[in-house]
Length: 384
Image (cartoon, rainbow, N blue to C red; front, side):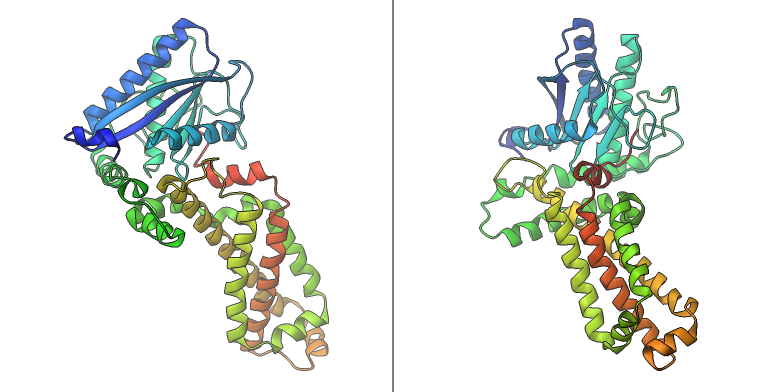
């Protein structure tokens, strides 16, 4: 995969172990180093078909006190991952992490970025901390590899006291899933195989290089929950729907458009709305590295398709609400507006028209979302 990989008989998998805080406590620094070594040994024992390197890097960017935003740490980890050509990166701080939905979180994985943020605020005893740090790292790496929670092993959902964060082996089915994922990751990056001259083909080749992993990551983000996660976007779409529902012009226009042009307009609106939010919220700017890398392009693909499926979900919800409205609004009122009772096709035409307008309005509302909040909603696999 990298230049030195040719000297290894096994495929090389590199993980960055980034210390982001200005830690001066030698005992804590020693605990971090022991955890790094133990993580590398554990991975080598469980996945002997690969050559593992867990590389330590000390950046001292943050004070070791006060809560930190996980998104800032993930952005920093991405920069280092791309700069050093690592496959994954774990960024560690002694600080607490500011959660979005939980009251407390110790780790935030992002399979789209292939990085995770870790807080070592686990225990005062360093021997306990080392074991739990490695257990937490295995749990977060499992999310990066597309694993779901289980009742036993590293993928147990942590309890309130985090006692389940211990070093345990992945199950046999989990190891098979991880091995398949790592086989794709350990291949040479596309930009290392040959220079690219066409950006479209580079994106296509990136998708075809690891379609299983990309689709797994997209599925893991549950894009169908976007209407709930992006509240302002959904509110803008629904408010527009309610206003147009009470205007005669919207009913007249909706039923007088042919279904085929309406359907094509709906597809165009969903794609345009996705591009508008993706560009307006700077979701494609995951690093300040100007050259396109396979890892960077892979992240853009995951985020764009996740957002696209989310916008499709919003359209489906709006279509259902609009179609239901054709039965809820009194038929006498609709007849006065349209001069005729609605048949089944006209109901569908109206619903498609309203859903399409709603998606466009939702895209405008989507750019009112806080940029960091929307990024966090799309990038965080969970708050562990």
